[in-house]
Image (tube, rainbow, N blue to C red; front, side, top):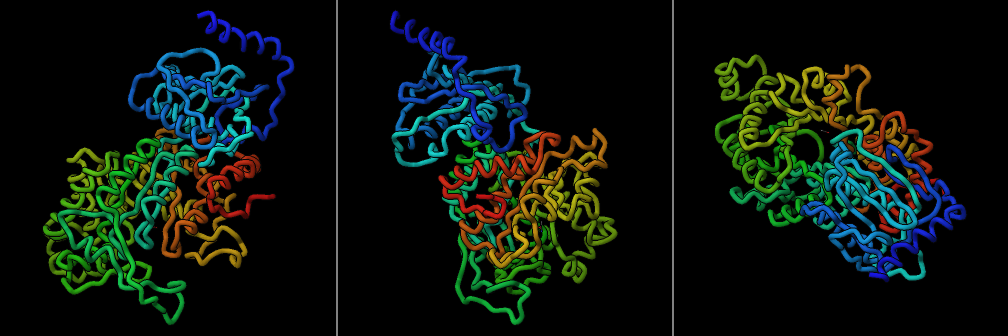
Length: 546
Ligand code: ACM
């Protein structure tokens, strides 16, 4: 007891005497991305050592996960196995506690003094984001997987209050044009979480490959997951050349569950996308009876938009409902993304079945037929307790009653949807398509689809259009960066396209608009680059002045 008292009092008295002599920290010590809402630097440091206790006074599984995450973050490089204590021993403590005054469920307070670190939140997600901020305040060597001795594990003293601007802070990955292994998907999620992003839009089905195991339809695995070859070079090159190599793969349901669990423990909700009625050629290769013309189809071997799409027949709806039923059992999140983009209407125009259906249902054109398709699927998905998201084409022919719109062809679709009081996620090509080149001089970059989207352009985007009134603006849930992979063949290249632009998306969706300045972002990013280097992130260097 005496010893405890002594230990408890000693640092206090030391700190009182030492306060005037505590060194001021340089601004670079506070390299946090995205920028916190309020960060007040203080002199001095907290030093993590092997006696530091991790105190957790909140007894929920989610908070316990956060404490375990922090302990696991600290262990590899320091070698310290921090004791997780259900009480708060006082000094030399990192304390995670409940604070109901933190009103945003993802918000937090982080106070670092020479004696202790306090993380306060009302929900575990907020505590998790405080941990990500603390991580970024520690030396970048904390990211190492091997014990690093001779370093002081210091965090600069500070008072932070922080919360996100938007609830939807997302990144997308197309795993169909090229397939990415589970280990990379997890790493992608890790990097999102480090930058406080909370949605991973997993684009799982396409013309060129179906990538999710559906047990009821084995030909999706045997046929739709594989293409006989892939176009070489750009789709626009003539003559087109092909590599002659069979290509493909899919995630088993066990792998999907593993990724879902991984994402959940990082507070990332996965939005799975099952494309309909277009971008369906791989599914038609497996089940041609789902097309309007039951010809033999092959999984697409080049890029673009294809005429052969799902036909709105009873057997297509039965197929899609069975597929979605399996998908829903795998993903606990609130949304199913049903695609809806780039669906040519040619086959429907030619189809007697479609024309009859339109007459019977009183649909005036094929856009209304698409709307009928999406509404029907929405009804089914809603009946399972989930909401749909669709690309902005789902506005054409009339929006399904509860659909959220992902605005990609500019912001107009998003504006129209918000005016109809529908939720919107902004991802316009001009600011959010991370498959575009990021340098003006494309000679130093790998082949890409085209376009030019440098980091400062991404950063400049404000997801809330000025034209919306306050009520309409509430429907802007946030924004997302998209990584389409026609020209992205490897994990390294995907990372190169995503980073650092994904960090601009993170700050755009987290930090209040009036606090964002590109020059300040770039300064912090340059400091942050050392951490990305430790993590071996293959980021583009165009905006990193060394
Ligand atoms: C899209 O880029 N087709 C949504």
